[in-house]
Length: 156
Image (cartoon, rainbow, N blue to C red; front, top):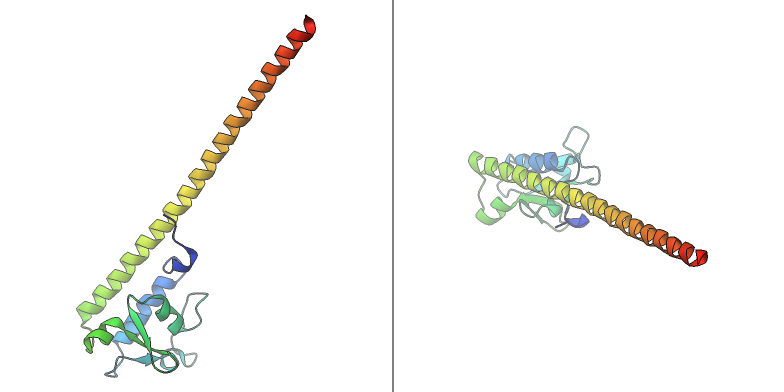
């Protein structure tokens, strides 16, 4: 089963790194609400910036990964971990490790699905070429039979 383009989240270059960084940054925030705004994460050149080429803001990454993050605030630029949103508590080191492990597992599975999809497309192309070759051979074979029959008829 091919993964639709809009669902290919982890298959994007540097996406896994961005998700792991965002999990760690949010888990390390000292405020009790667990919310961190875009400005705090990447407010100046010394702060963190997403590595994914198509994502310019952390909020975009958070929006594409609801399995880990929630957006809140009026401008929807306040990001928090789903864990903190639900439990109203800071995640333990063990929980952070589990979230990061789940991100890696999800990434690996999606990349594997994408690779298998590409392999299936290539195999389908090979089969199509094989069928086309067989059809052409059959047509040429029939053509040579017709030429032979016409030659026999002309000889008589």
